[in-house]
Structures are given as C-alpha cells and as structure tokens.
Length: 315
Image (cartoon, rainbow, N blue to C red; front, side):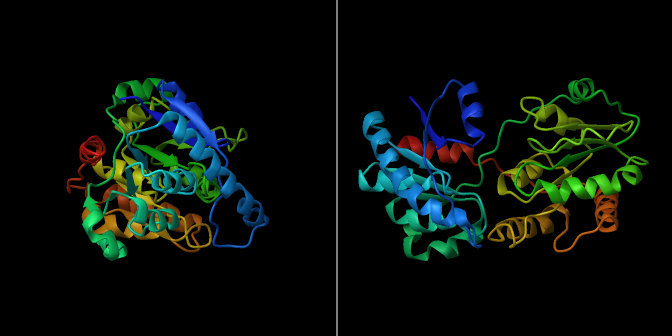
C-alpha cells in the first residue's frame, strides 16, 4: 500500500513519520478552542487555507481511501475527502467524540470507536459505527535493555512519570515537589516533554528525558508503576501492558474534559488511581503508593489495529 501522511507544519509528527519512510505533507490548520484566545481569530483564516491545501494534496495523490484520527489537523483533510467523494474512515479514540469527528462523520463511510458507550453520540449514523478499540503501538520491550539505557538497576522499584507535552507542567511540578520523598521507595524515569528538562535536578536514582523514542518499550518493561495523562492511546497502552498506574487527566480548563472520562472508564477494570482537581504533593505521593501496593490489573484489553486495517482495505 502506498501511504501519504498529512499533518501540521509545526507538530512533532513530521519527524516521527519520516523516520518510517512514509511520505509527509503539511497543511495549515486551526484548532477549535473552548476558551478565549487571540489564536481563535487567526485560526479562522488558517482553517480555509488548510482545506484548500488538503484538496490540492488529495487531488494529486488520488488516494483510494482516507483514514482520519479526528482532531483539528485532520479536519480539513476529512472535509475535502467528503467533497471529492473519497471513501473516509474516521476513528475516535476518546469516550466523548471531539468536534472534528462529530462534524466529519456525515462524510464518513465508517466511524470506528474505542468504547461501546461512544455509540450514543452517533445515533443518527448508527449504521456507520464499528467498535474496533484503539490501535496500539507495538511495545515489546526488554527490561534489561531499559536498565542499561537509563543506567538504573533492579534494587528498587521503577516509577515511570510520563509528563508528555500538553499539560506536562502540572505533572512535572508535582514530581519536583515530591521527588525526595518518592526516591526513598522508587527509582524514577521522568519523561518531561520537549523543552521541559530541569537541569538543576540531580539525584541518585532519578533520570529525566525530553522524549523517549524507540526505547519506550524497554522503559515500560522495566517499570513497576506509571504516572500518565489520560489520553486514550496512552491508557490503552497501559491497559494492554497491564501496568499499575496513576492517571492525572487534563481537566476541562485545558481540554474538553475527554481525558477525565477516558480515565474513569478504565478505573473499574484496571484499579488505577485517578487524580483530578487541585492536586498537591501529598495527594500525588499517596496515590502512587496506593497504586503500587494495590493489585495488578487482570482485565484484557484488545488492540484495535487489525480491525481498523481490515476496514481500510475493504474500502
């Protein structure tokens, strides 16, 4: 299959995609924000430009099918796929669909969902909806490679902190406040997000990275517990790997509240701790200890990749 990936000019996806050898094209794109920002005004101009650019790219590439993961970057492409009558497969990762997928579903041949409860948001298009689950990265890892990469050892449990990019400041700040107390029980691998390294933090048993690429499977393999945001794909990976976890989802002040809903959907089956609202260092440490000393998840989570690829091929 010949593949073209369309993404944003400034996003991290270009470097990730080009490493795989897949062709990448960028378009202008505007984000739908639920709060006041001057960028809302600017994005009002970027969106139509992105739609025109997407149309030019699609006409030249002439694809047999377009796959959209939703979100503001894919919105112009999905719109033009509908206009050009190219079969469109949409996928929604979250429990509550985002604005882009709610709008673009009218043009879609199929809408793939990750959670059964998401069907209620697409009642008008019920015949298009297919429960596939989330596609998950292949995260086979070797904990010994993880120890060598991080220069840690197995004398203390490993706590993995996934600060990420969006909203990373909250988790990073909580870890900084809690670091000395947590290091009494754990060794810590901290992924802080690009541009967020704190070079003043030097502790035995603590390592920090802006971003971890191919080694992430090894880091997961050696980790005994993980602190993460509530993005659906991250939670699916943790569930697939049956990891003990503390989830600190982005609240409605920074998102549409989808991460809170995602996290709550997993709690019953996986026994994770979820922290929301005003969180202090004491709350953070307590949740980590409760999750670590609690039972390991036993529920099975299914990778949706094969079902999604089958739908794409059938289109």
